[in-house]
Every structure is written in structure tokens, then in C-alpha cells.
Length: 364
Length: 131
Image 1 (cartoon, helix red, strand yellow):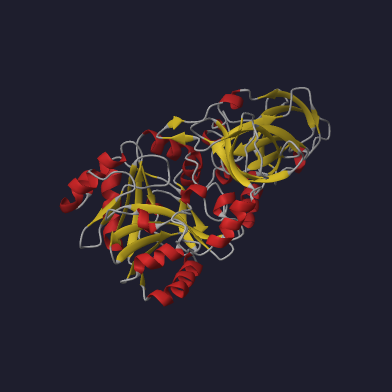
Image 2: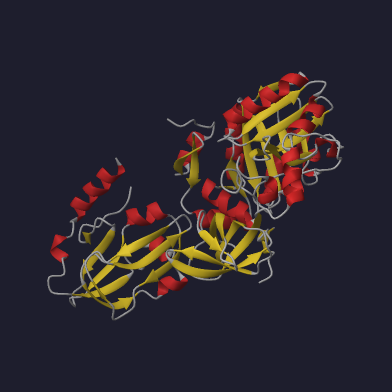
């Protein structure tokens, strides 16, 4: 029996098709995944992401600890409220999980990690934290709702607690504000659109949900969440990277802070060795202008006959053709061949993202 | 719950078949099948004039989620395909038994039409598959 979020009954009320996702019963769609996708790109939609794991870390040495734990450098966070995307690596440079960390104070940080990786993440962080006397508190009593789309912030504002309305509307991208009652608003998301992610006590989330429905914000399922994030060129843990692939092979080099050079972080020496040796696999974007859909695990053949693989692929509702992320052998490519249903089809190689803020951003 | 019209015949690969007054048969996929596939984005069909055997693969429907082969529920010659679907594959989702039809066949002698499932047999079959 899958776990249920506080919004479970609200999903059923909206005729959601529920599926198991990382041990949770979550909405796949509420009728049409395509309509939900367009709704977010053109107006606003909301996603129940309460299955994700919220971890509050505190202690005198918490910054020092996170600078050791994460491949990105939390010392880049200068202002309270600022967020950072990072990978958490093992000693071999493989990705244990990707996460967002919020700087809440000199001795306090909030981590949002994936649902499917919850147990191993908590075990790993707890083990690594021992030497730093950092307290880790999982916030299972909180729910999380993402409201995304060009009109999202406007529709949310009147539903926020009075004390947060002004500061939330004033947030720049990748920043958060909160109050003393565990209400937390961040200008972040996983769609390539503007919007908020709100973390709040679970007993208050149905009221927010109902208010948003009334304001014309449509519920959006995991299906559209996946097509939106892929159009936005964002990686999905478990598909595009895992413990056997490094950030350098996953299009995530930009999230690895090699500087300052004296910062020791888990996986650093393995990544440096891979970087210095060069010739490692790379992540690219693919576009297919034929009547077929690129999908995960399809085989990609490059010019010299070497083989790569699609890690995530889908039909792009915004573009009207198929897009994918693929891991290829080191090299520079303009075109590759993808094996789909025993046929070889030519796909163009592009730099993701494919779509941002409702607009195509690839040159074909 | 999916709709299963009483007057149609069905295959275990989730196609429906309607015998028309002119002796041709129209083929589509069932409401149950379109729901399971989710939003269709491409439909690829056999060509007019093609001779197909019973249960021969004669098309592909591709949804946001997955690709699925279409099999001809009976033997015959393809006499018409639904050209609307190349531009509007979503018709299969919104109207699987009418505007979302896939192709028409001129059935062969011994086409296998009589071996297909009735609505109640198909309904039972869907129920057992879901168990």
C-alpha cells in the first residue's frame, strides 16, 4: 500500500489517475497530460510535491558540513533565503541524489531531496554528519505544493499569510522567505516557468489547494511534470544520473564547485581525476523531427559507430516533436542515429534547455 | 470506467470492430485502450490496398507515455484509413468509437469476424486483465 499525501482525497475529487511513485500514491494526470502541460506553460498549474523529503539541518558547524557533503559550494550563498542546486556524491563521484539547499541562517539550512531516495539519503547524511555534530530533522509533518506558470505568482499572492505576501512577491529567482509558523515560500520550480514552491504544515495544505482551485490554478500530475522539466532541460534523478554516473557525464558540471581548490568535498578527487583524464561521456539534448518518440534507454549511434543511450525522452507538447537527453561517448556531434522500433532515425544534437518561459529556445 | 458499446465486436488486443451496411468493417481502439495509453501524439497506419492477416501488426499508436502496436482483428484489405488522425491524433482519446476510428477493411472470406469477443465477453476480459 503506497503512502498518501495530505492531498490524496483532493486528487481523487479531481478524478486523478493515481500511480505508485517512489512508494507514494501520486496523481499521474487528471484527464489529459497534454492539457495540463499547456496549462502550466500558458497560465498556471499546481503540483502536489509533498512526497519530497524536507530535511532541516542545524548546528554550529553545519556550513562546514555542507561544504564537505555537497559538490556545489554553500559558501556561494551570501544572503539568507538564497537557494542552491547541488549533487550529493559518493566517493567515486557518482550521484547519490540531487537536491536544493536553502540558506536559512548561519547555523541553519534546509535540504529538499527526492522521495524515492529518502532512506539512503538520510542514512548517508546522518553517517557523514557524525563528525560535525549537526542535527538532522526530517519534517514529515510538512506538505509541499508547487505553483508554476506565467500567472502563478499572481494567483497565489492573496492566499499567502499576510505577513509573507509582500516579501514573497518581492523574491527574486532562487530565493525563499518564511515565517515562524513553518510557512515557507520559495521562487523555485521544476518546469522552466516562473512560480513558487510552498512548504507548509500539512493540515493547512488542503485550504491552500482549494483556494488555488478557486483562483483558476489547475491541478497538474506527474506526467506533465516530467514533460515540463524535460523541455526545461532539467535532469531527473534515477533516469539522467545515478550512483554510477558523475555530474560531469550528466550535464551537471556547472553544479560542481572545484573552486576554491582547498575545499574538500566527497567525490572531489574522483571528479578531478575524471576531469583531468578527459574523454568521458557527455550529456546532450536531442531533437527528432519525425513521427516517432524518443524514449529512455533507446540506443544512440554516433558517427564512428560508438554507442550511447537516451536517458530521458518524450514528446514535447510545446514544440510538437520529440526531445530527449542522451549520454554519448566523448565527442562533438551535430547528428546522431537513434534506434526506434528497429528503425534508424536521425536526430539533431542541441544544447538544452528546449523550452523556457513558454518559448522554444533551440535553433533548428 | 470505460465505455464498451454493445453493438461492436472486440479483440483481446483492445481493438473494436464494426460491421458496416456496405459489408466493410471499421476498426479502432477501445476506450479502455486509449485510457491506458494516455494522450496520443502520433498515429501511423497501414496503407490503403494493403492485405492484412488476422492479428497482423498494421499500425502504431504513440502516446506521451508509450508506443503500442495496432493489430488487425480480422483478415482483409485496407480500403480506407482515417487521415484526420495525422493532424489530430487526440480524436482517438476524445472519441474512440466514432471520429477516432483507425481504418476500414474489406473482410476476406473466413475473416475471423465470428471469432471476436462480444461486448460482455470483452468487458469480462478487461476485468480479468486488471486483476
